Amino acid sequence: MNEKTMRSSYAPGDHVFLQGEVVPSFFKVTSGRFAKVYSKKSVQELGVRRMLNEADLIGIVSHQELFGEIEALMGRPQGFSVFALDSSSAETVPADSRETLQQVLSTDPKVGVRACISFAHYMKSFFAYFAGIAKEEVELEAFIRSTARDYMAGVNELANVVCPIMNDPDLTDAKAHKAYEAAREILRQAEVKSGSSASVACGVVSYVGKDVKMQKFKAGELLCKEGTIGDKLFIITEGAAEVVTSGGSNNIVIDAPGSIVGEIAVFLNLDAQVPDMRRTADVACATDLTAIVVQLGQVEDFFLKQPEIMTKMLMAMVNRSENTRKLCEHSEKVLKEMLYAKLGILLEGLNNMAKRLADRHDKASLGRPAAFFAQRARATYNRFKESLDIIARKSTIKT
Image (cartoon, rainbow, N blue to C red; front, side, top):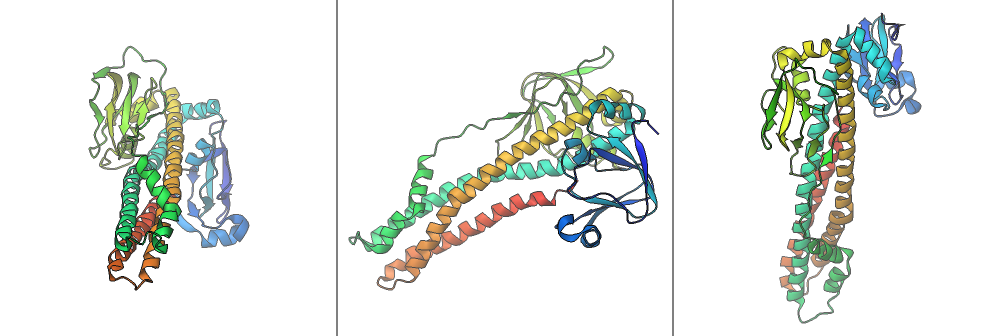
C-alpha cells in the first residue's frame, strides 16, 4: 500500500461518506462491495438510517473499482452516499493535492486510468445535456420571434374586426399589456448574433520526446466525426481544434498546446469488452494543427509508462469538465431569461386575450381572433414546458 494512501475497513451498513459532504479524497475498493445511493431529501431532513433506506440505488462497486472520484477531484459536494454491503475495505486516494496525487499514480497508475474512464462516462452524459441546452437556446429564440409576430398579428386582426371602434376595451387591453411592448422589442432586436466561442485550456504535455511520432492536419479537417467509433485520441502540440455543438453556437475551442482531443470515446472503449463507443461530436481543426496520435490499443500502455502525463491527463479532464459546466450554466441562465422575461410574458398576453375574447358575444367575427389567441397560447405553453423539461434533464446525470 502506498504511504500516501490509507486503507479503512467497514462493517455491513457503515457509510463511507454521505450525500452533500465535500470529501478531499476518493476511494479504491480493496475488498468487499459498496453501494452508491441517491436520495432526493438530505440527511438533515431524514437522518442517516432513514435516508439510506429510502435512497435509490445508483450502482455497486467492488474490487479495484473507484468511487467518489469525480466530485473529489472537482472539489464539489458528493452527489450520492456510499455504504458497505459486506465486510469491506477501501483505500483513500488524496485528491486535494496534485503533487500527492501524482505520487499515488506513479506507484498505481491504473487508478488514474480508471479515474479517466469515470470522467469519460460523466463527460459523455454532461456534454450531451449541454449540446441539448445549446440547441434549445437557438431554437427557442426562433420560436419567441415567431410568437412575437403572432401576438402582433392577432392584435392587428382584432383591430380590423372592431374597426372603427378604436377605443374597444379588448383592443386597448391588448396594446396596454406588457406582451405588446415585449413583442415589439423582440421584433426590433432581429440583428444577427455572432456566437462567441469559449476557450478551454486543458494542457496535458509540456514537452514532446524525439521518439514520439506526430501528424499534421489542415484547417477544416476533421479529427473526430460524430457517430464513428472512437479508436484514437489526439494530443495537440501546435494549432487549435474546435468541438462543434448542435445549433452552431457556443462551440468549444481547444487551443492550449498539450490539450487532448477524442478522449471520451477512447476511454469508454477501454472500459468495454468490444469497442463500440462512438464520437459524441465533430471535432474540426480550427487552424493547421500538429498532434500526437495514440491508437486505442496503445492508450493504456502510453499512459502507464508515463504516470506524470497520466496525472496531467486526469487533471485536464477535470478542468474540461469544470469549464464545460460553466459554459452550460451560462446557457441555462440565458435560456431561463428567454423563458421568463420573453416567452412567459407573451404567453400571459396570448392567454389574456384568448379569455377576454371568448367571453364576448357582440360580434360573430371575433370568433376567429379568439380561436387564434387560444391556439397560440396552447402552443406557447407546451413549448414553455418542453424547455423546462430539457433543463430538468440535468438532474438525471449521475457520477
